[in-house]
Length: 233
Ligand code: DC
Image (cartoon, rainbow, N blue to C red; front, side):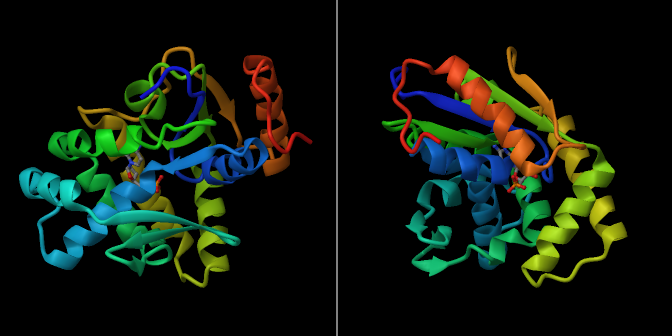
């Protein structure tokens, strides 16, 4: 990891608008994107496929080290490839999210995935999306963001997102799952979800995606004013 490569960390629970913001920042700045949640989801999916129990940290860390995972940049967005197969949509289900949250609570798993995540830090820069990007993976990042939103608003957003993707869910079940996942992600001993020291917290409950992006554009410009920005608007 090089300190010369600029990193923006974007942490927070699901449904706060991290994905939309990170997609915007990646396009705007022309930097790389690390979707760390996708890595935990792929590992959980690979474990389910190969019958490895989701609490077996040792076997999961071996699986993590062998993971044949690739992110393919395509015109419609980034595709996630596991063993050459496109798993982008398969890993977006709530089942995969819950399984990811379980494997993510295990210390051997987090340790096994650390180097893989840091390897994404390459010129011209990196947008790192996750739960512990600012606290553990890239603590030296100059701009650290932490998005929050009310649980009700987050459940509604996830519901809409999943429906648009043709995935049928029940709002009440979704709300319960979100609360369980939050409790696991914030309550775990290793790398719990919390704002990094110095992180700027943005509550997106009453903001639309454009308003969040505008606020962050101003923060990026004041933090990185000496760095030439590609695709500047
Ligand atoms: O962001 P996401 O919903 O795709 O993440 C799925 C789960 O993975 C999330 O509930 C917790 C875990 N995760 C994590 O522990 N650390 C990260 N940096 C990213 C995700």
